[in-house]
Length: 362
Image 1: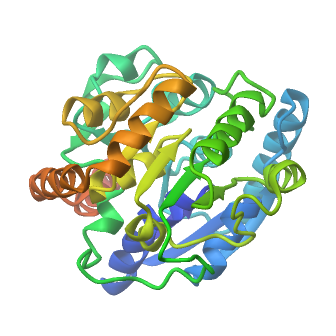
Image 2: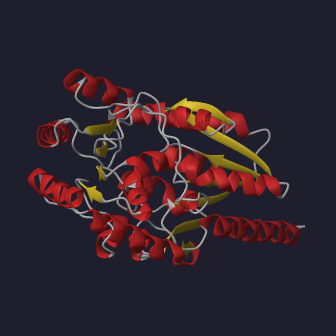
C-alpha cells in the first residue's frame, strides 16, 4: 500500500511519526508532504522526517490564505497525478483532502477540533473515515455533513501518541540556557493565524506576559511562539525579560522542567495536562479536550488575567498539588489506547473494501 501523509503542524509531525514508522516496518510505501511554515519545517528537520515541502501557509489574511490554499492544491495535484497513492491520512488538510477526493484516493481524516469550523467545513464532508477522540460527540461532526457510519473514535487524547512512547520518568535534554535554581513558567502563544481565532492582535497575550513579569520577578518565563511574526513582536516588547526560543523545543523536555504551563492553544496544553505538569488554559474559546481535562482535575481555566495569576501562585506555593496532579495524569494515561493502531486497522479495512469494489466491477 502507498500511503500519503500530509503534515501541517508540529503536533501532526509528533502524532504521525509513529504511524510513518509502523507503516514502513510492515513494508508499506509512505510519502510525506508538508508546507513552508516555520514550525512545520523546524519539527520535520528536528525529527528527521523526510517530507516534501509543497506550497505555503498563506499567513493571517483571508485572501492570502485562499490564494495559498488554491496554489497548494494545484501543486499537490501535479505532484501526485501520475503516481497517485492508495490512501491519504491527514489532520483535516483542506488541500490534501480536496486532491484525494478528486483523484479517488482513500481519505482518512483525524481531528479533535470540531470548533475549527472553516477547516471542518472544507474537509469533513470529503472524508471516507473520520477518526476522533472518544470524548468528542458524533453530533459535533455530523453537522458538517459526514455520515455517522464513517466516524470512528479512539480512547485517547492525541498527545498520548508520543507521550506513551517515552519513559516520562527519564529526564530529556532541553537545550535551553535556563537557570534551574529558579521557578520556570512556560507560556504557549495562540495560533493567531488560524481561521477560528478572531483576535488579530497580541493585546491580551502581551497583557498576560507583562503581568507574569511583574508578579514573578527574576523567575524563568519561557514564551513559545508559533510564527516568526510572534517571535519578532515578543522580542521587540519584552527582550531581556523573557526567554524566547528561536528554534523549536522538545515539548516533553520543557514541560518536565516547567513548574507551571500556561496555554493559549490546544495541543501543548493537553500535553502538559497528560504529563501532570500544573497547567492553565487561557484559550479564548472552549473545546471538548479542554473541558474533559478540566473535569478530570488536570487543567484549570481562569476567566481573566487576575485569575491566571491567582491560580499560578496557588500551584507554585503547593508542591503537594503537583504530585497529586502527576499521579492523576498517570492513571488517566493508563486507560488510553494507541490511536496509531486504530489508524492502521482502518487503513486496511478501507483498502480491502476498495479492492473488493474494483474486483466486483471486472
